[in-house]
Image (cartoon, rainbow, N blue to C red; front, side):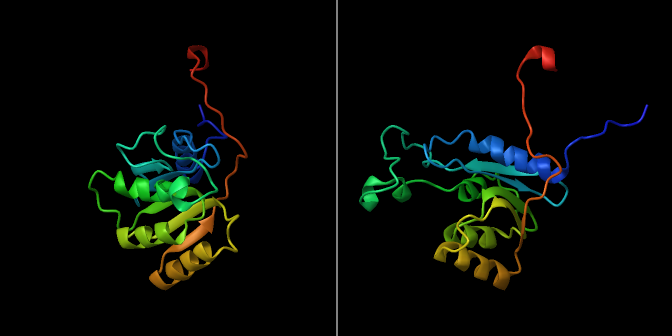
Length: 165
């Protein structure tokens, strides 16, 4: 019997894990997930945008506008930083990171410092912002490659129903 066709690629698998992680985010506006993968295609860590451990999701603001202290921007850790911080202690040198949005400059610094060598992203919708322009400048200078995700499938779906397994 020949092998099954139409299976997902490694990139689709890891980006799917990043998107699944994003579904854990409580952010009402933007849900982003990240998945860090070794050169041997082993998942090292995942993360999503949310508050640091110990900060209650109902105790801090999710607002996008207002004074700095009244917005989520003062408190939220981005998915990339969470994935780096969630790492169980494995070296991230030479790894790649899958993320829905192109990383901001703060996450770019952490990615470079961690030794991650490639960024795979779905959307670069903030490409014209200073933060992303600076990210690309730092990635280029540090030799971190980045590329837009290209999958064979437009969508993937999951089912938890026993009869679908």
